[in-house]
Image (cartoon, rainbow, N blue to C red; front, side, top):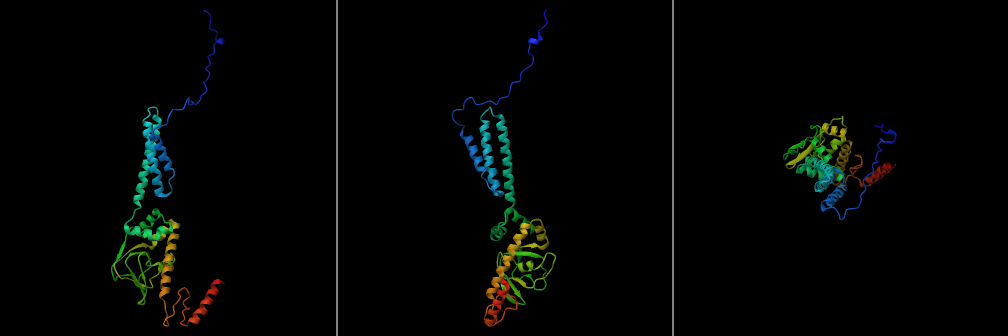
Length: 294
């Protein structure tokens, strides 16, 4: 028996180069309506905006889109991997939708807090999430002040909180003389709050008495400053709304301030600029404006 001729035998296997399969021919017709509906939902979903409502819009449409894709892939027996991936994405988007819905539910408020948000905080750009932190700082409690009861007594009550009137009307007096009223969605103690630094203490210089049954929300001074330390944006918002409230009260007082001769005071001028002589008042006003410009 002759030995085999190994030189004539090629025992080395030549590797076959990998080539991606190319479509031999395009399929006639189009996919079913479920396939197109899935991509329409995905297209609409990726047009969602920001914020919680934007996220809810986004994940809701993505959930519907991947659900339709799951149905389409299930109808084709050759796309098991496609079915598994689309089903996994459907489950993830559904979970996100439920999570965002829960977060939206968690930032809903009682009617009085909703009205406060719409009247005071919404117009300055505070989101519901940020407002939730403000409400949590007051422990979601609304206080009640009965008729003829005092919120603060001149020379006795300490300045240790910041409050907003929700319903009712408060009468403000000093030395027994009427100054002005406080109406719903106005601060009860904005001048006192703004007059003190965080480390300072003080007492009310006016008396605040309820003319009817009042409801108000109050924030303790220390808790509010802790909130400001964590969220500087909220500190700026409160500074804005408090000083705007002070300006409104100042202008309301300016319209009611008259001396014994019937001439109106201008409370925007220094206290020594309240003469009864209109000529002197005009001269001092010009001098005050000149000094302000220089």
